[in-house]
Amino acid sequence: MRFDVTFRVAVVGAGPAGIYASDILSRALPGTSIDLFDRLPAPYGLVRYGVAPDHPRIKAIVGALDKILARGDIRLLGNVEIGDAENGLSVEELGEYYDAVVVATGAIRDAELPVPGIDLPGSYGAADFVSWYDAHPDYPRTWPLEAKEIAVIGAGNVALDVARMLAKHPRDLATTEIPEQVMAGLEASPVTDVHVFARRGPAQAKFSPLELRELGHVPDVDVLVYAEDFQFDEGSEAAMASSNQTKQVVATLMDWALVDPSESTASRRIHLHFLHRPVEVLGEVGPDGVTRVSGLRTERTELVGDGTARGTGELVDTPVQAVYRAVGYFGSPVAGLPFDALRGVIPNDGGRVLDDDGGHIPGVYATGWIKRGPVGLIGSTKSDAQETIRNLVEDLTAGRALPGVRAVADDDVVSALEDRGVPVIRWEGWELLQAHERALGAEHGRERVKVTSRAEMTDISRGARV
Image (cartoon, rainbow, N blue to C red; front, top):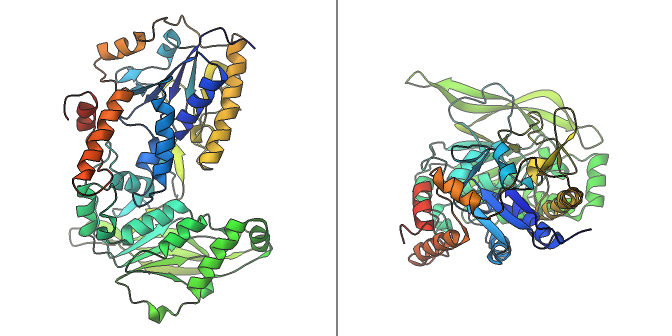
């Protein structure tokens, strides 16, 4: 294998998938020029904009990603949209500047839940709510928190995050990086009960043990689990026998199920319901003539032996005034590249992006959730990137690259973007924004307070405001 040729590679998406892919590539092909693009002024993707602010362990992940980018061998180019020639670069144009492109745009949309009433006012996607409380610059600064009783549909960590953030008293978030407008919105919430619904049993829940235990330590919030929702089949027994995490989750839930509900004295409650399949979001016409969410209808289910569930025909109506679906994330297409609209991924073979006929598009690769779907954590992301970069290196060293005559000068692409009026954010700009957010936090005894306006983020990063 030859390492004497300098290649230029664009990586699209500065979340963990894109950063790990860039890091692995820089080590696999020393001397390669790597540009890491992101459509936002700030890097780190869902680590910054998809994790609840009361998860301090995420700081360690940010610190590790910071160290990779601070080395200087990977050039961060934020505020640039790939696939949009007006606000960045089209995919076709990349061949003028790069030998290859790795798409790591992740999955940020809510997966659909096709049940009647899901589009009623008062029904929301969990990803949208997370983006609001994490101060994503492309989302509104306000959120309608008017419901006393809320349903959350899902059995994963996002569902737990949403339930906890809805039920938690804002004063217990005061030391986090949560923005003031989010604090104000949560303060005004009249919520008393949050109901989380899972269609299968406790042994099939996708909660992590740590995430679940954290739910039991939220001040003035009781967690209620119901004994009638416990059912174990052979598949459940096998899952507990093969996974210590599953065993811990079930043990925690069983401990809560043994607590007498009459001992619930907190002002807010989180109810965990198992063996409930959502079948309809119920609506009621208000005084203004608008039909809004008034309840969630679920069907009781039963396990059939292999861990899957079937309906029993028994319907249960739970009065709620808001419904949040946390049934998974879904990828978004990149203009100019193929997209599998059913799976929400870019079609690929080991990271090599495939055209409509199943052939590899020269020089185009995918990694992370846009490659494999929204499953797996950081460890999966690293191994995923290794596979993609291994194939990229093999192709580049064999002469298989993007079509086009690439530019020689590294600054050509930045000059082209600036000429289009795209305010590119580099690593030094991100450091300015970080320093500004930490200064805002220091004023209130917090580590940081996020800047929420894209324009303000851009101005600070480019030195227009300090």
